[in-house]
Amino acid sequence: MKKDHKLLYYINKWSHLTVKDETAILAAFEPARVKKKKDLLVSGEICDYLYFITQGCLRSFYTDEKGVEHIYQIRMDNNWISDLESFFSQQPSKYNIEAIEDSHLLRISHERFEQLLIEIPQLERYFRILFQKAYINALSRLNATMWETAMDRYSEMLKEHPEVFKRVPLVYIASYLGITPESLSRIRRQK
Image 1 (cartoon, helix red, strand yellow):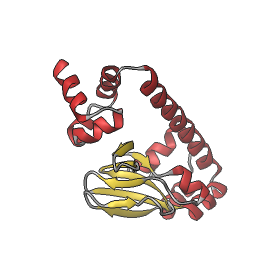
Image 2 (image 1 turned 90 degrees about the vertical axis):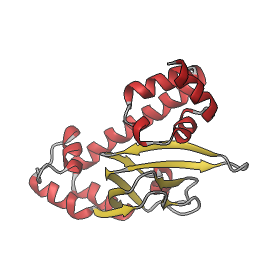
Image 3 (image 1 turned 180 degrees about the vertical axis):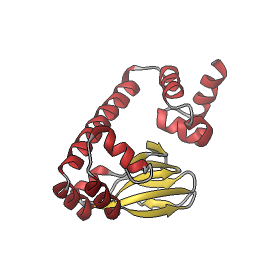
Image 4 (image 1 turned 180 degrees about the horizontal axis):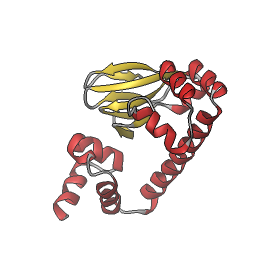
């Protein structure tokens, strides 16, 4: 593997790449940077890229008719972020993606991504598993908001992703959990 490259490390967890495959993957991704509070994607634009976060923290959210933001994803180091619906359909996105911290990314365009999947069948396996896991996580999150208490959702997030509480403003965490910042403050006092 190329000098302990994180992207290749995570792909190799569920797939077995050759050196030639690794070289092709690294050539297909281009580095990108986004400063804190800057947008990677704006609602109404087509999401042209799939991003791997090498360092940093980003959020995806939509804004409702009343101007209230609803956070859909919070992603940090060694995770993927995109609007997959827009990326795959090549239709305008409903979401914004914004950097919470200065962030370093690797990105791949829709066209190059599709070519790479044909060139490297093992990569298709990796993304199938990744997207299955993302789908299951989205369903779990939906179920949690319907059937679990806010305290349970908070406790689960604290257990599974404690680093989020060190790097993400509480107002964003509250939105992600589907509660008000005041409710989050009450929950944190009770813990």
